[in-house]
Length: 316
Image 1 (cartoon, rainbow, N blue to C red):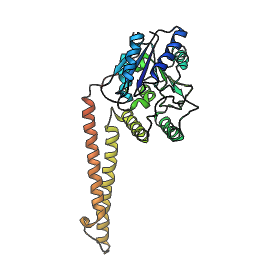
Image 2 (image 1 turned 30 degrees about the vertical axis):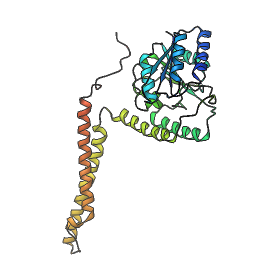
Image 3 (image 1 turned 30 degrees about the horizontal axis):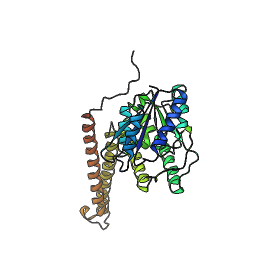
Image 4 (image 1 turned 120 degrees about the vertical axis):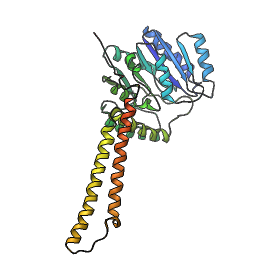
């Protein structure tokens, strides 16, 4: 099969018939063999009924229905598990992503050799309250991930080589960082294509401030796991050792100051009456706890089922 199109959706019943007809027109016009996998993420409208009708009329239309709303990442995860195409396309169901981009996205994967191609909506029709946070978010994501050539990490329109989606795990709200996940899995040939962005035709946007805040928290989590997930002692042990040494030196300093004051006839107080002693002691305790956290992290990592799960590209 040439192409699998995975479409996560939530309350998009008005747009589904038009979207599928558009995809079908593009696919048939280019002679592609394809499937369209709709993942109904707990919609409360008639989205699933529409998917059932499309599936009954067109064998290319397939569907997955969640019992409740889990989020976009779980929807993509289940869609990826079912996808069989050599190239996998993801897009949103709100008609803001144009299926006319599919042939060129596929060409970049098949002919240009990219592992992943992300869309870039250079000209957007979203309100300013969405575009400004998005630009700030993408600038931070580029700096943290090291993928400098991407301008829109969260664009729903992407193309993947099948090996990519079968070797990454999209969980939580990590769909925003699929390029970063792919890079960490060893798929470094990541490209970008300027795509057309269309104004929303039906329904209302699901974007909110909570998604913007959660995006930053997820980015920090992903960065931390990619750097220290396998060897947590490298971060916890370093910070713990540093704090313990600083605390110990501070205790020595407090004691040395008292001895100097006694020998020179200067007024002095007991070490246990000095607030600096307790600050130093607290620092040593925190350092010890961080060091122990590193040990616990190493024990957990050692017993992880994924500790020897490596990405092997070829064998001879």
